[in-house]
Image (cartoon, rainbow, N blue to C red; front, side, top):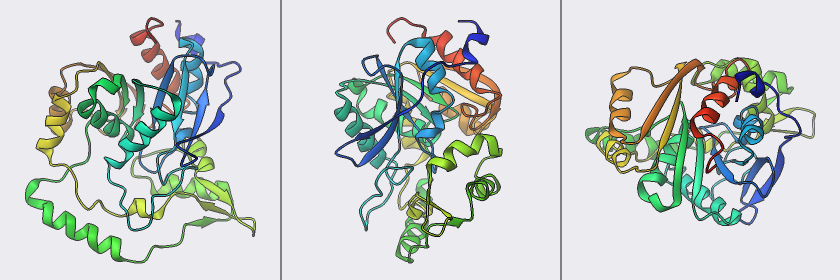
Length: 300
């Protein structure tokens, strides 16, 4: 499909979904009876992360894209009290969503932390994952084995402290500005707006308040070691398309090179853009074009 054909999407407004007995919220684009791709967002993001890419793919490939809000994010329920947000816990969100949608096997479209979750599932349950499209993410955050005790110490101390109140802002514009200023990776206000709109709710006094669980900001109690991450990647047999941004988090860093070398089935494309290139208005059409050209219509 020509690049220019991906600049517009006709009639693909998102449809809200409730999955896993109402625990998980989601957005859906495309025909309800079309082949389904599950989309997994990054840390502190939500299903709106795919609000610019999903309609392009739904139209070009005649597929349905269901983008989850992971637990504690967007409009999904928060994790129960006295529990953690470990990376592997999000695997249950994906499996619960698959069960709700009647999917024995998933085609996964995943960004950043969502890409880490997708890799865990593809390694541990290869029969449940058909293929992966990963956007600026591969493997997961990790802690060297010699730092296990200090990581646990940090996590325990943070989890014992009282929770802070969810941030409040006078309006959406102020909330967007705070996300842009405090983001882990660079992002402009146009890119951030869909994420912030879904991550906020109005208050009785006319302000907006963040929906996201403040526990998400606490350090993990335990992480995989680098050796475990590489071992998990080596167990993936599903084909992977990895799309990176030139200004993303991977690039030619030594650890990123190791991650890519660990995967037997990886095709890599580097495009102009940052970590959220699939949401950047100037980059999203090229991201869509690469995905469409790589996977095509066959077996979508």
